[in-house]
Structure formats: C-alpha cells, structure tokens
Image (cartoon, one colour):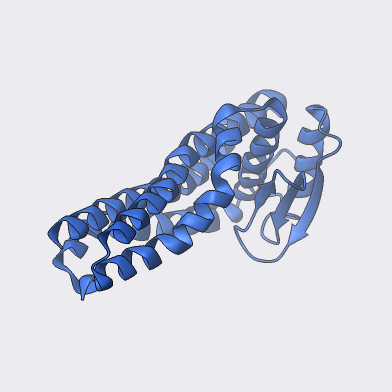
Length: 225
C-alpha cells in the first residue's frame, strides 16, 4: 500500500525538525518560567495594559486550560491565556502573552498576511481533512482525477502554513518591540523572551516544511501510479 511507500523518507527532515522544535520550545519555556520578570506584572495584567495602550478596549481576555494553548481569536476578539501564563509573572509567560497581543494588534491594523490567513483558514481546514480521502480513493480506484483533486486540496493547506510564517514572526517582532520600548524590559529578560519565541517560531517552520514535503510526496506517488 502507498502509505508504506519508500517516499516516506522525504518526510524525515521535517519529522526531525518537528521533534527538535517541540523539545526546544518546551525546554526553553520551562527554563524561563522559573525566572520572574522585574516588570512586576502577571500575564493577564500585561495583556490588559498593552491592549488598553493600543486602544483595543473591546478585546477581551479569557483564561483557558492547558499549557502553551494561548491564542488570539479574531472572530470573537478575545485573547485566551493558558494556566501557565495567565497569573504568571515569569519571563516566558510575559513573552508568550505579548506575542498573542501582537496578533490582536495585527488584526486591528489589518495586517495583510493575517487577513489572508483568516480568510483561507476555514477552507484550509476543510481541505486538509479531505485531501487524503480523495487522494487515497483516487489511487485505489484508479480514478486519478480524484487523486489530483486531493493534491489540489492539500495545496491549499500548504499555502496556509506558508502564510502563517510571516504572521507569527511579525507577532513576535511586535511583542519584543512592546516589551523593550513600552515596558522597558531589561536586556537580560528580553534575551530570554527571544529564546522562547524563537523556539516557538521553529514549530511553525517545521509544520510548513512537513506540509510542503507531504505535497511533494503526494505528487511523486501520483506520478508513479
């Protein structure tokens, strides 16, 4: 069967990068979670301060379960902070919170890559779920038109991962700028924030690489069959 195909080796670099990125982000977050920031704010206090300073009074803040589950929801206009960051005053927590507020600011300013990502997100999720279904059915039945349609669907998911990169990198840039210029975070603490956010960014790079290599693999399998 095609899922045992030797072309699976194409995915090895992405798998290794994903493993390294996951271990690194967990390690750095744990490391800097033990270091309290001298800013004197918890995650939720920092979030509210930055949002209000940017005039985003309508953006709510919610607490959610989990660790590193923090995210900004552009549909609900809400920043959701995890248990690991909401009440924490650590360098790691403040860096993650500032990053998510960076997304809220992107949304408010109509940052183009974010607008594009939000627009294709529902389609990308749909495409990602169904791409392999059409691809497998097409190969098994010999209906290669279906297999090609599966490749097209998966291409949309790949595009989503590519567009995600500038969105995430820009949010981190905004976060560092806010912490440095608006809150005067000391240089040694900024170094820790950069370490955490850089590791987190690599998880998105790994996801993009995995998607691209999966697409290449699908094309090779379709051509062979």
